Structure formats: structure tokens, C-alpha cells
Image 1 (cartoon, rainbow, N blue to C red):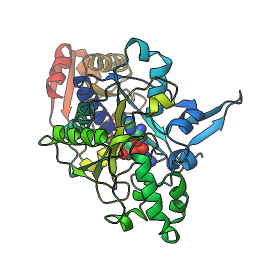
Image 2 (tube, helix red, strand yellow):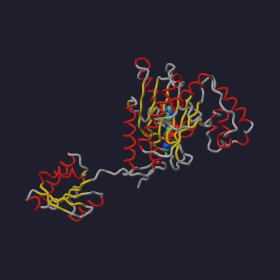
Image 3 (spheres, helix red, strand yellow):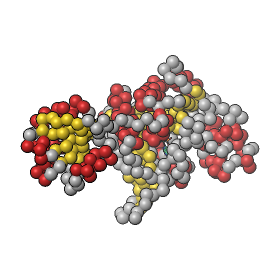
Image 4 (cartoon, rainbow, N blue to C red):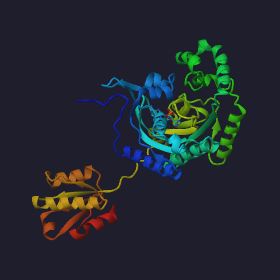
Length: 409
Ligand code: HAM
């Protein structure tokens, strides 16, 4: 028998209901903020992620599912959504016709990370990208929209951290200061950070091993006056609307960020980011488009769900239809269809089983009521309605049963 691949999961009800609930919650808020849904492909050119997510990132170096197809094309199964949104934006010429765009996407992402609690190889993201707006108001709007979604869903005990990574003017100076500082500590760095030191020194700050050791000791970033003003304005707009903390150690693991970055964190495991994002003003130009500012985020659906705790969504009460004889099968089948057309969650149709077998199944599937159609009932154009919790039952006219059941469920 075939087995599930490690790091991948089957998600059954009631857990799967939580995904739908969060998606619905997000859709409502995203529409209110003027975002439109973009359905993206799962497979892209490998090069798209190498160039945008970043050649030196863990995602591209170690975690990307990439392959060569029959036409010798180098492809990848998407590890994140932002590069695809930018590709779609450029490929469909939004730059000319309507450069300001707000997109959202919902879909599964794939990263070959070592599986552990809260870290999966296939996971769902809900993401939003606001393209074409360089104002600090766009950053603040994105953060507040994310808060509206997670709060409406009922996520609790999360904290919000923000930071600014500066721009092409101020970051290189900081990068160098960091390299100078970390070089003195080189021997004490973990293996990963020894490599990061040259290629991506900022990443040492959020290394789970080395980061905490340097908190409070590393040189801090001096933003250029424009980045400083931008960051202050973002904070001013957020004040009083959301609790947040400025964390100079927050650097994010993707290459494209500039200026504002943020994370919503919950729980005390190392996989504590329930959602994260930031500004990426240089990415669109680096992908061949005109210089276009952008800011976005993505939430890890599984992690947002976990941060709310297991509150199962009460499924709609269901009704089970049983037939007690061959002449009743067709009327019972028609009744099931009529109930479904009326919006009632209906089970049944196991007419190859006897009465006992059908009632056993009614209980097994968690139905709240059973509708039993036997030859006597059919002769009188009635049906027996049984409350499966209390065991009470009564006869009701077949003609009005659908309306009666609708009132109950
Ligand atoms: P990211 O930080 O790589 O950013 O992922 C965003 C969120 O996806 C994380 O905060 C986490 O909740 C969830 N996530 C990531 N990896 C896993 C995993 N292996 N298992 C479960 N959940 C995971 C991005 O993907 C950027 N595209 C966000 C963005 C959009 N920045 C600008 N626009």
C-alpha cells in the first residue's frame, strides 16, 4: 500500500473546516481593503525564484523542489507567492495600463525543510501584495489588514515586530559594519552563519543559534534620512491601532526586502512566525520592470490556525435518510436530493443495508436526525423523523418534510 510522503499531510474534517473558515475570513477583509484575487500557477521557471527570492537564501539553496521536465525546462514548484505575483504583473503589462495594483492569493507552497511542529513541506499561504505605492501608509495598511484578518479569525496571543532594513543607500554601510563586527567572532559562528557572513550577513541576526547571542551587542542600523522618515511615519500611522515592537534583530530570510519588514509571532517554538512580510521596492526593477515600489505579506494558514487553539467549527447538522424496503428506495433517494437542493446537509442512500445497518451508519456519520421511509409510511405519504440524540420520533407528512427539516438544522 502506498504511504504518505514525509512532511506532507491529509487534512480531514473538522480540521479542514478551519482552513475554509480562515480563507473566508481573509477574503472578506481583503475585499474590504480593495484587494482582488489572483490565482497563480504552482509551477514556475526555477530561475524566477533564484532571481527574486534570492540565490543565497535557504529557500532557494536547500528547500526548493525543482526539476527538469520532458522539454528540458528547469522548473520549480513554488516555495512562495511573491515572485509569481510580480511575474504576472509584469507579463500582463500592468506597468503601463494600471501600475497601482492590490492582489491577494491563496494557495499551497512547497519547501523541502526538515519537518517539525509548525513546519511542513506543503503548507498553505494567504498572501497580499500592494504594488505601486511607496507611501508609508501602504506599509501601515498592510500591517493593519493582516491584524484585521487574524483577529477576525480569533488568533490570540500574537505579537507584532517591525523593523526597517533601509535601502540601497544605507544598507551597504550597515552590511559592512556587520561583516566587520561578525568577522571578529567568526570562529564562534555556526556552520551556516560562517557562509552567511560573506554572502548575506544580515541573516546571521535571525539565525536561531547565533542570533540570540548577538542581541544587544551587534552594531545597529543607521537609516538614511529618507528611510528614517519613512519608518517613523509607518510607526506614527500604526500607533494606537495595533500593539507592536521595533526589533532591530528582525531581518527576514528572503533577499528582496527593503525598508519596512514585519512579523506576527505566536507561541514559543522556533517556528513562531504566523505571518510575515515587508517592502520590496527594488524587486520589480530587478526582474526587468520599471522601478516600482511594493509591499506585501503572507500568512502561514496552519500556523494562524494553531495560534487560535483547537476550536472546532460546528459543522452544519446533517440528516440521514434511510429506506426500509425496495419500493421505498426511489422515494427516499428523491427525498435526499430534495433536501440537498434545499441546502440541507444530507447523508444516506446505503440501501443495500438493512434497517439496522442504515441506522448504525446514521449514528456513525454524526447525523442529528434520521428520516426513515418504510412501506407503511409511504402508503400514508408520511415519513418518520427521529432525533438521534434524544431518540424521540414522530410521523410527518412527506409533502412538507423538507421545510420541517430546514427549520431544525
Ligand atoms: P515567508 O516568511 O517565507 O515569507 O513565509 C510567510 C509565512 O509562511 C511564514 O511567516 C509562516 O507562517 C509560513 N511558512 C513559511 N514556511 C512554512 C513551512 N515550512 N510550514 C508552515 N508554514 C510556513 C514569504 O513567503 C513572502 N512571500 C511573504 C511576502 C509577501 N513578503 C512580501 N510579500
